[in-house]
Length: 430
Image 1 (cartoon, rainbow, N blue to C red):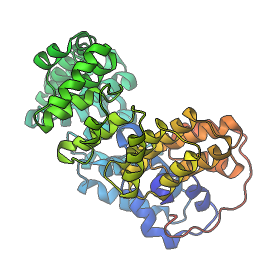
Image 2: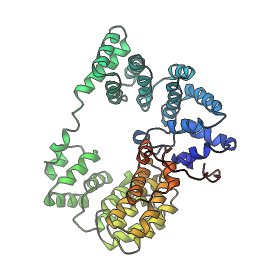
Image 3: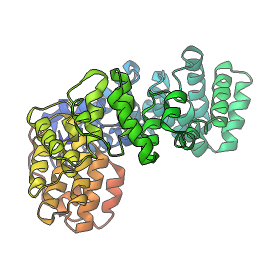
Image 4: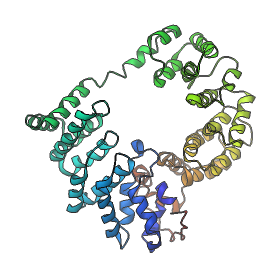
């Protein structure tokens, strides 16, 4: 568990103890990405590279990761393995660099995230290698490939003029690189198209919204609801009540993702147990803005029955607060085992204490969030608040210096304390 969460205590322990009995656990964490959201957190590869670097048998792990590259697919595990290899290559390991070049067959999901390390290793030559691979992919799956991230990172790492000059020159004799260049150039020219819809949709009246815009765009619907007048919002609420099927209901519910539903709360409560099209989840989300005794009762029912949408329970209670709720919602978080629900609950914990301050329970809440939250960004918020309060204990401060989240490492800065040896972990801990 400690490795999967990316806590720094695992590295502190590795510096002082023999971890041969944990070899299978450590190798698993090298080969598989346990980040909650790889798009925002990145992989845990550099964290595992730091840990393995403390071990006398580190060569075993290096070899196993490099062997795994050729069989990697197009998922977070592949990104983890390639970035681990890149860490080796950045430290001068030529075998790792060759293995990366020999094994890179990008897919539309993670190929761009993996490709960035080639830019960092070899600059323009790395860019052209990746561009050729992606150009070939674009010829086969043009609708699935996005070149935006690769291009933005190339401009940052290699320079704008150097990037375009190299792509143009190489594309003159290489059709795959030319395909990448053309698609990337087109994307860079049209990159502002989507955001321009946001100001336009917010000026529409309810009837126009339904007639002129697709109803399957959640962002546009909640954006409209966020800025709609009270009169237009009431029309949308009546539209929800009159909706004839689950798709119409879901589209209307999304309008209330950030605004209070203005009519009878029972119109929303009647939908919370419907799993079709995730209708119940949207109804519960809308109810998080509604102060009403029945909404508070719903939060407790969701937790008591381990219902699918219980991740919103803390937010429901925050809108319907009573004395003693701090200990109740903290217990909900501490007892939860489902990873998705844990993350949803953890995102609401700090906000709950901001809305309803309680000195006695805030530090236990922050420490629980640090220990159990599956997302390192939520853990970062807990560390920041503990630092603000002057409550980041020496042991935690030392751990944070080796956290998988580099922002947490930077938070604790220099002048780290000397702490006692970490206690012997169990298999579950690791």
